[in-house]
Image (cartoon, rainbow, N blue to C red):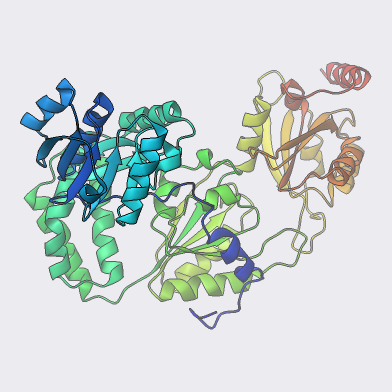
Length: 504
């Protein structure tokens, strides 16, 4: 490892290959700078008029070549949105394409489309033929315009209506005021460059700028704000760069369950240290340039020691990096957060905690049941079935686990559930109490295993043999019997109900 002398965590190289590479792209999203550049548009139809307007709006000098022009094109040429628009009343020729920045064809006949595309490529000009993807080097996507902030959406021609629907969604969530903030960013950039800040200093300036934009999108970016941000950046320029540590809850797996703050912190991270319990889709939310490192904690497998994780986290932060320690669920619930917080504080590093949706909350949402159902539960308790030595903890409160008015959530139960259930039954827990195990809760591969306390061990073994994988959680209690997904054999369900009624 090149960043520090700390031990290399198991699986780092594999993790960087898996999470540090992009998935295949149907199209490369690029934005052409066309101001003052010549673009040739062959065709005089309404489709040509729309493309001409778009190109002129981007500042291009548009030459529209066609034997005749629709009314929209004539009106547009008289009053273009930005770049000039020249109408040339004749058929196009290959010579027209020489030296053009782009070639656009609004052409119907496939034979002519093929000739136009071939001529453009021969001239070394990127070509697009409207609604003819077979002849296109690039595509026009749906656009959200807050220029200089521009968002492009493409479905690679697979579903244009779907692309338009996505555009409408984005239009609804991006404030119109972002146009002013993007313009301010462009005009302030020379002053930021003049400060000759380090990479961290520049990023810090623009993060503070972005935070102000997100918090007050419709406000005007004022000169006072500009001077304040520049002043802070100048003061920090002389300071030794200080890193930081953030413990972030990744939630149970569904990336849409991340908090807004978790997304913001992940997108400003330099390094992400994550466990195997973190779903790959959550890692995709992190800043693409961030280094993503698997640091073990894989559960019953070879894992990086906690002391090594602490040392790596501190070493990276002391290099001035913003380190995110990403943990499944909530970092403060069976996440060993206390040890990592202590390590960061002992090193004099700033540390923050961003809570996450717990595995229990995620499971309850998937079961669509209340863990504190007023007819069945007076108490909710979380316990771990996995001690430091990997065995069942010796100090569990068995009377509490046997309480018929409690809902219990058991973390890390796979190896020790049989022993836990046996001791809880011996302490008075009704063996027919509804219980359910969830593998990979909230993820696409989620598996739900309904049973009773007494029968769940066999059901767990069968599920694992059948391919159930991922983080496992067990919930038991009479409130669990209300789950919409809970389906026991009739005789077992009736036995559980009788037992519950007998206990009052």
